[in-house]
Length: 264
Image (cartoon, rainbow, N blue to C red; front, side, top):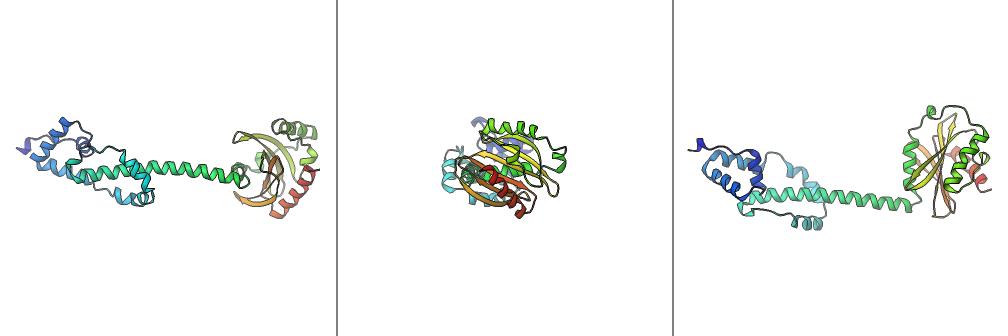
């Protein structure tokens, strides 16, 4: 008699395992399971699966916040738990996996928010990181061309005054042995960010970047980012960074000269 029974599709059997079939269809398939060994065997196979999902995700589940997982799992409806522990176990594992993924996304976003806040508290490390990634794309060809005359430099620098309220002249931003190339106005965290690009004949692109800051004065410090040296400091109203491929001691000499003119 069993040879005349139509085998349910895997989709139907999986829906039965997950408790997602309407009661009438579930009763029909359960009757087939009881009447035909092939249907019962296929159901058992699908219920335990031959792929090691649980083993693969055990580290993730172990690392997830247990209290959060339990509260989220409590909100996942488990239908037809009376059909057997294997069904409930599979349903529970998939629910835990889904919850862990959600918790992971929330944790990632929380971490990003926290790291963003910490970065800002630690002297603006985040904006320097963003600028360094941008400048790392520069090559000498990016800044090829003649040095603009002083009057053109003044026109470009006037944009910084309009956006940031910082009046600069070509003399103030001139760097020894490094060619002024252009002013570029960007935006970071809804604040204007000014970049003065230079080309060092020996080491390539260099940039002085300026953004408003209310963190107060800070003496110059140095760090490495994207294979470049970064010297950063701040005044009462602005944060500055000079970034380039030049050696640290030369960068420090340039900054010492630059700061003396900016504060003169």
